[in-house]
Image (cartoon, rainbow, N blue to C red; front, top):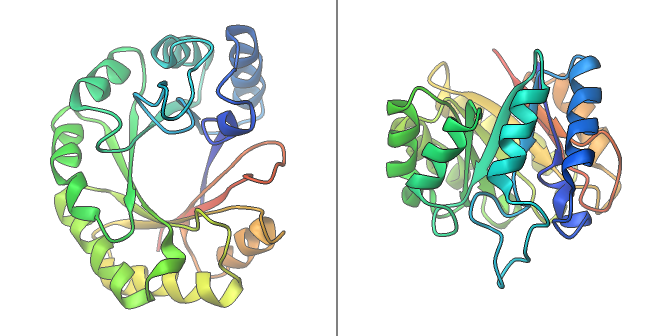
Length: 233
């Protein structure tokens, strides 16, 4: 299983996107020293999120991505991108600044809007991850079909994303199982949940038994604290 720490992306919501350079440097250095393999850094709403709509960042996210990449000795730097918020040029700039994992998120019924972005990311040689957000709103079998769209577009790992923190153990179990059955060896499966019901961590460890291949979460806890798993079959 590979863990991705999202303190500097999802945790940005908790900070109202006000992370300073000193904070980013200190957090990345500590996570890297602790052996965390992947650290996600962007505005809470992904590349291009700094705006009137989503809240302005204290420091431009591309500067923070570069700082994180320069600070980490072993960890890889990931960045989040939402089609319609970020652009292809944002992906290229993030890579130029040291990001090597492109995580592309859509609503769980709109995977098709990510096709061109996965194509670009793969052309650039980036590792690709897909986020199917608000996964509680559709049944497992429909979620699996959306995951197939991402995988066919070039996504190497598709996440069940419980954005609302609304899923309990059985709901996550059924969705992860549906994605594993649909994708087989074509793509890995991950889980990203939130602590709204206090189940983020219990679900995370329960999913270890189910063999999801990746897990994402922050070092600390907040109402938005995500738990994400990614595993190899």
